[in-house]
Image (cartoon, rainbow, N blue to C red; front, side, top):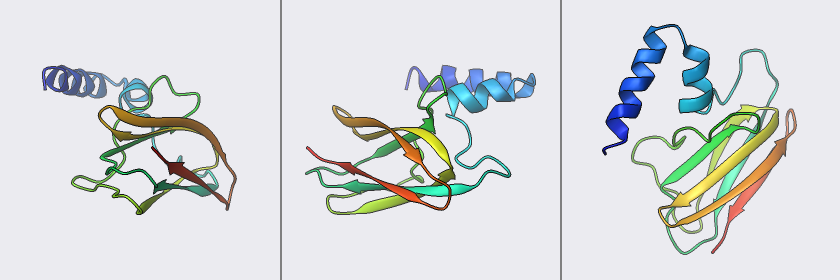
Length: 120
């Protein structure tokens, strides 16, 4: 919680000052679908023994993974999956629960999809 308030204040300050590209790319990880881009999907499949409470997605070129992309209150339980529509291209994915996380870069083709399976 200590870091959440300063991060929120920094985000608001930068957004109000016109630094939206910094906020979009560093703080949030950028939009999942960029206007006009062809799209594909990333399906996160949970084959682990615990619920995934966060899935972070960002273009491979972004400077951070950004924020959790799961809707508020959503968890991906063991044996479940969640699908994200994204712009075609390279995506960095981090999924997990505190202390248990998996990371991978993956290439999403226009009109196609990739399956990202979390095990462990």
